[in-house]
Length: 113
Length: 113
Image 1: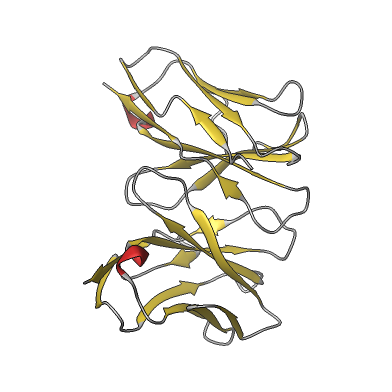
Image 2: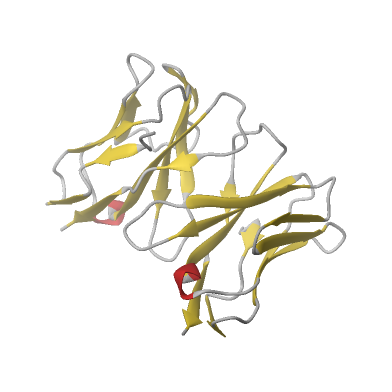
């Protein structure tokens, strides 16, 4: 049973446009969410997170939106750059400081120059 | 500051052979994690250490997998004997105790022939 789902295995976007990556979860006990970025032959790198007490968190070009009623979060990248091409993983946990992450299967983003 | 260091980066072995992976976490991080990442999937937690104590090994297949973190710093993960289905990337991560963010190493890609 996949508790965290990323239904789009891949996404292609033109440079300068917005990239939107989606993530759905099923466990209502999750209340802390993270996005990791992974380049080939490297480990996942933390990108941005959001607590369930918020519905938006922004860090430069990256914004994460959380819709608790829909159990859905999304990562927006504006503007997209070729260096953003990577696999993006959504992860969820039971709360800030709770160690156990449940990861989605990832979305491969390709930003076209 | 050095990140999480893992070795070897790649390992190819025959089935039924033993194999070991090594991880050096970020200095000062008391919590260490081992994850398994199958192709096309997100990382899945195998074991978590707080200092030298394994506080969650519920997902570790104990018939063939073992791990240790004797001095609360470096850790090794061992498989004996390896099976074809063990071919995957083994990731190590570390964090401060209770920390929200886990920092990953580049992983060890294991191929069992």
